[in-house]
Image (cartoon, rainbow, N blue to C red):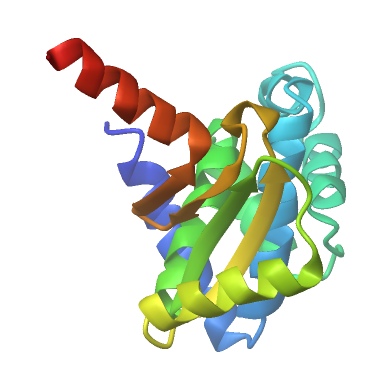
Length: 180
């Protein structure tokens, strides 16, 4: 079966259940933490898929990684996932849930990459321009510094990329010179 199909179905079911329980916002935060935990600790996947560990322990590990309570909507969902032997899809389910939530709540994921740390004034101006371009979408932004850009910035907003870096300008100039 398609590996994207299973996480998508489970994520839709979780979103629907969490919305009915009025916990969709909390589950969104928990799924973000869970996905970050998987990224930060590769051994998490091995522990969750380990056949020799008791299921209850694996459930506690996932709840802890997501910062969720035992009586939460996510707790019940995790039990369902283990009942159906789909625990190896938990990271993908977390990512799929985040996408479903952002789509349903009109949220754009924006990453701003700069060559050096920007002041709050500069950053807020960039965010303001991005908000205007995204026409009413809420923005969930992350920033990071990449010295390889030399100067300028790169903005990634969902599927769009604006590369206003000196590195990119030098690359374009090099290509122009090579084509002549």
